[in-house]
Image 1: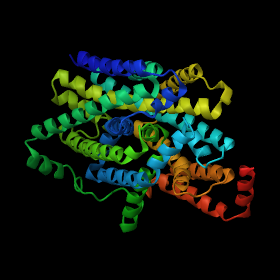
Image 2: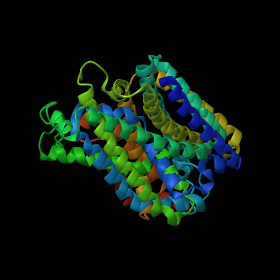
Image 3: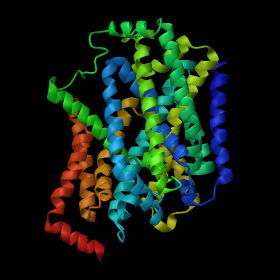
Length: 476
């Protein structure tokens, strides 16, 4: 019954995606950007499903299970930072995308300023997108594999292979429109599955008052919001920890697979309505995720005997009837697919629009690239050694720090030369990677020093004669 329920929901998602092909206009514009005709509520639900991926179902629940209520700062920081940047970027991004007929994120970064076409910057952005969004997509396949391994005892490779085939099928048939349509259905299943499990979990331990009391007894400070395990256990350490996650939210504007949703909205004037849908759903989903992570610690108290990232599928297996286990598993799997498909399509856009010569940009080559990216992401998922949470944070950090500062500087109307834009990206990405590799993330999340480096690079170079010379060359 678990298998039947799971397969039923997967089939529904595939059929929704494939059905989008009936509205397809058989062009690159429709395949990569859904023809700019997506209504606000649909774009918002799609963005949420894309954002709330295997990271949320697997990584975030595992982190909450281990760390307790302090994980709430990831929610507060991330959503606050995301919201702040939305006031500067989202509507302008939608306007520039249509006016310049831009189909890739690298295209946006290279041609935002009227009359410019920074080809070297576009190539750099395309390479970074393909590499790190490919890794990000691999993390989604890995998350789905973990869930299927626990519930069905299947080999770890099975879930990744199934997920990659399904994602490719509906990406091939309808492109971004298929991704958005399935995202909306997946988003509803995701929040239903999480809410159901939270409700059943609270009931299982004797109601909400018993729930709180038992959580307090787990360990000292388990329900405390004060972050622990920081490099500096004082006010400055807490401030830097929270600031790091706010920068994580700022970095949403550097995520091609999320921002492309706002690029598809049918009317730029509908952006406020889109954001209301987006942030309302986002807050609800993040809150219930944290609730499920806390609940899992009561239902599965053997913290040292299993991988905390498997808490959700294990808890559903222990508490729910078989048909509902299938629903929860479909929620987990749909979360991974809703993000992976978006990332794979963004990689396809980057490869065909930003890396390949323009004359090679055909719909057939774009679809062939989609197949290639899917295969590469699958191989990373099968043979990569890092866990889901680490893979997501690495990819998110690099994309946020690399693209976020340049996008923000554009949005506030500042002029940027090509050399300045390239150095902003290179310096920010370098600092982000080194910050993480040297283990400095215990003091502040690496997105913050990375983005700050990008902003400082802009400020320093914009004050030099070198920038003036390069700007003149660009205009010529």
